[in-house]
Length: 194
Image (cartoon, rainbow, N blue to C red; front, side, top):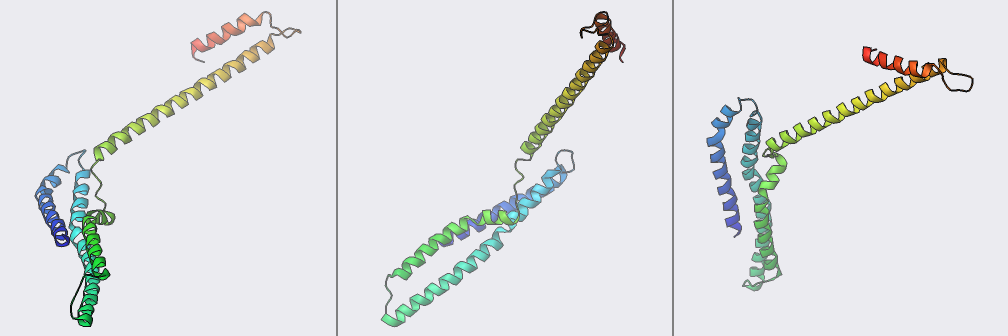
């Protein structure tokens, strides 16, 4: 099963590289059009990612091979000492290590993804979400600036009302004749655009 896992990874790698090589010219052609510029970088990163499966698997294989060599030397020492080999804790550790090798070969694609990240599959989703976030950010900025303008206009109106009522107030603090003229003057200013 250990050898089958290694063969499976290499077969899948070869198949995917052939498919990517066939699609390469099509990707180069599509990348010319507006909105498809990202396809070229995604294709290159995926090709490099899958191409790195073999070197990563070879590094893993060399580590496993070194451990297998040490395990076999222990088994040879057992044969030399007793004249026969039998199932021992060393053999159990060897079997466990082969199971770890099977699992390790299945993790080769994710390890290659650490080296070259080929995560460009959701580019359209990224563009839509960035468009939505920029639109909502623009709406928030517009509302904030509009609220600032309203607050500024209200502050100026309150100041004008205070100024007009201060000039027309009586000793009791209430304005007599300037109340209506102050309000109408303010409205005339607003209507005239001042």
